[in-house]
Amino acid sequence: MTRSVKDVAEFVGGRVVGDAAVPVSRVASVASAGGGDLVFVEDGGGLEAALLGGASAILAGEFARGVEGKTVLREGKTVVIVEHPRLAFARVAAWLSEAGVGEESRREVGVHGSAVVHASARLGAGIAVGALAVIGENAVIGDGSWIGAGAVIGAGVMVGKKCEIYPRVVIYAGTSLADRVIVHAGAVLGSDGFGYVRDGKTGRYEKFPQMGTLRIGDDVEIGANTTIDRGALDATVIGRGSKIDNLVHVGHNVVMGEDVVLAAQVGISGSCVIEDGVVMGGQAGIGDHAQIEAGVILGGQSGVLPKKVMRGKGVVFWGTPARPLREYLKQLAALARLGKKG
Image 1 (tube, rainbow, N blue to C red):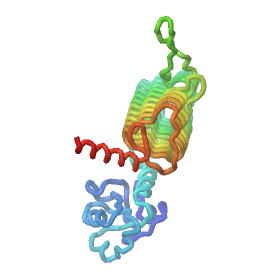
Image 2: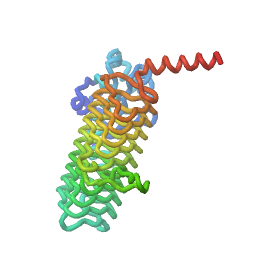
Image 3: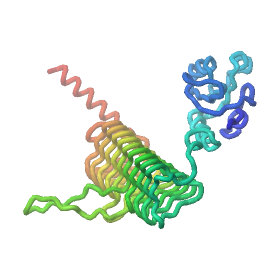
Image 4: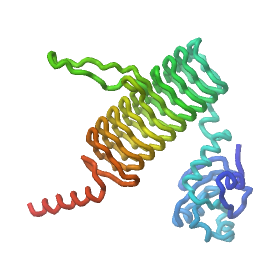
C-alpha cells in the first residue's frame, strides 16, 4: 500500500517541488533509504546528502525554497517543503502505518489460542491478543487495541481504544488507560508503592496500605521496563500526551500533568506534583512531595530535594540540589578556580 507524494504534501500541508506522482510506502533515514522511501532533513547540508541518496522523496524545511526544479530533476528527487520537517515526518510515519505499512498492519486480529481470557472480560471490536497473554476478570479492552504476547492485564483493568500493550507488560488491578496509550515491553503499571511505617519500639517496618488506583490519560507513551506505582489511598495520575522513556520509576500518589517528558532513568518519589510541559533529562531524581511547576526543564542527573518547589517556565535547572543553569555554571567555574589555586 503506497501513497503519492501529492497525498503526503496534502496531509502535512506542504509544497511539492518535482514529480508529485512519485509513490512512497515507507519512511527511512537518509543513509539507509532506497526506492519508495521518504526521508527528512533539517538543514542545507542534510538536503545535499539526501539529494544524492537513495530516497524517492524528501521532507525539507523552508531553507529548501531555493531548490529549483532543475536541481531536483537532475538528481531525480521530489522535495516537499514544510514548516517543521521532523514533525511532518513523524506524522507521515504514523499515517503510513494506519494505511497498512508497518508493524501494526501485521498484527492478526483475534485472540491467540494459547491466551487466557476470563469469561467476564469484555473485548472490543478489532482487537488482537497475542500468545500466552492473560486478561483477568471484568477487564475491558477497547476497540482496536493490541495485547502483546505474555502480557498480563489484571482484574478490572480498563484499556481504552487503539492502545498498544507490548509483550510481557504487567498491568495490575485498579489501573485504567485512556485511548491510544502505548506501553512498551516489560513495563509494570499499578504495582504497590514503597510505603512503610516504622515501629519505634521494635524497629520493624510495617506496610502502609497500597489500595489506590493508577489513571493514565490519552496518547501517553510508556517506555520499556518502566514502573509506575498505584496511589496509596488515592490515585497516581499520568496526564494526557506525556511521554515516559525506558527505565523510569514514578512513585505512588504522583500527579503528572499533560505533555510531560521524562528521559531514561528518571526517578520520581511519592506524592510529587509534576505540572504541564515539564521536561526532565536522564537520571534526574525528585524527592518526595516536591512540586515541579509548568514548563520547568531539569537537566540530566539533576536532584530536587523533598518538598522543594521548582518554578520558572522555560528555565533550565541543573545540578544537585538543582538550581538555574547560569548559577550552576558560575559555581562550577568558581570551584575550578579554587582547584587551580590549590
